[in-house]
Image (cartoon, rainbow, N blue to C red; front, top):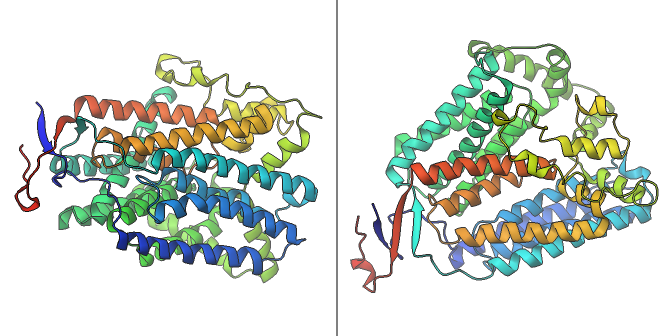
Length: 496
């Protein structure tokens, strides 16, 4: 059944175009953040030379430019590419000023070339992306969208299922094959990311009832706690970041207190994570729900033990934590070795992509999504084939592109990324938050925080999650026809 919706009505929640006052608020926050980062990079670090500070600064400026364009209102729609670019500050800029033990082994010339490569990649990507988002597109004739009232209950149910899945997985209650488990896990993670983002946006825009708001906050906390039981904080962190971003977009304000509280908690857990892994990862460990208090108590105990260490040992541990977020060393390796010592891959790690879109339950011999990562590590002699099957040394999209085609590969990736993020953003600009267009843009936004994904992992995750959205579009959404009605604002109504 086709529903009719005037193009200026607000009965369906929309991704907003920021008002001038709201732009100024976000732009002020942007400049405060920018000033803080640049002061840290220039004055508060001890580097071997000023060149390291210069490289970090030029990468940071290139990474912040898309955010400036969005916060100032020059770029429209969801900030997919701005968030993607921001990740380069921690993964590429900071390692140059924190004396990363691998980065400092490369010559100043190699470091400068890497810095120029990253800055050029971000600059070209920003140029392409901005072409798509500098103006608002014409609204389509139809939208496929979820009904707002019914979708809130559905999305809350999705979060409940996600928490139950984590409980069952942590406790060893799932008895399904590896292939089916992978498909179910991907479906649950994809749906939970969408649900968390949409509900956080609706919470920020005051569109949830009081009990729905309280239940959503409880489920988000439960989701993070049950996800972190596996001693991997990436899932909990990604869930929190996605929710905060959506809330900020909806409320147009930054919730400083919740951010500080969660960051303190995640930092404490991060300090004790290594000791917990050393104790429990060497054996299969199942954790039942009633054991969670003791589990987190032990975890925090290791964290406080870390805080009580002498300053020199704490500094060493802190450095090792910062090193784990870096991927610039992989780009430096590829640029140092290729093509003189080790030839380019010429698309070898990309050749597996068609195989990754086949569901595992249809192909029991399907290759791993991390096969591309293994190809890179074996090619650059970081691992043997046997080692690559059990452990993974992370690469990212930019380093992979250079390993395949050199600087031309980086330029090609910048153009592809700019087009993908730009078109996804433009497609969803001024679309209802519960429309097919917006859900896909939400999915793309959640992917921007995955800093150690190669093309194989990205394509596999994107395809699986997109199939979930296709299912939602076909079976749960209804068609809304956009009809422009010329009338006074106070008399505009929606025909249902």
